[in-house]
Length: 142
Image 1 (cartoon, rainbow, N blue to C red):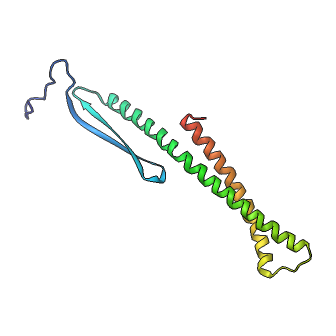
Image 2 (cartoon, rainbow, N blue to C red; image 1 turned 60 degrees about the horizontal axis):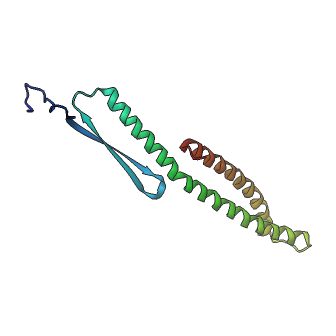
Image 3 (tube, one colour; image 1 turned 90 degrees about the vertical axis):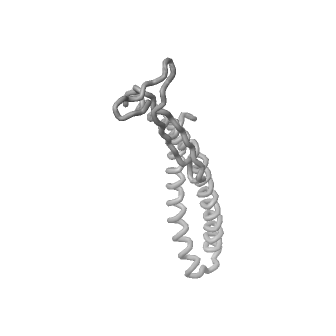
């Protein structure tokens, strides 16, 4: 039994649980979580415990990466749609300008700003594409 003078002895031929641990991970921005539990066994060394924890962390990291991929893809698609809309508006303004109609100062400023913003968004889309590819590679799904 458990006493101050005597260490606990495990039952014969059965693992003797002396404690437990839990690991929890948040999967993406959805708020979903994943939880894994493990036990500490009598006589188990630290390296064995660390190996099991490392294995659990590896699994959780893969699941976190898998959960982030759809979010990255959705963000990228949203940026593409926004850029397409901006290009349409820009094309209309440039057509108006090229047809000889005068543009207001606001419309001229919009042309300049939209050209700069479209370039910035195009770079962000490229970064998003790279992030998606890296996440897929890290998760082992393509």
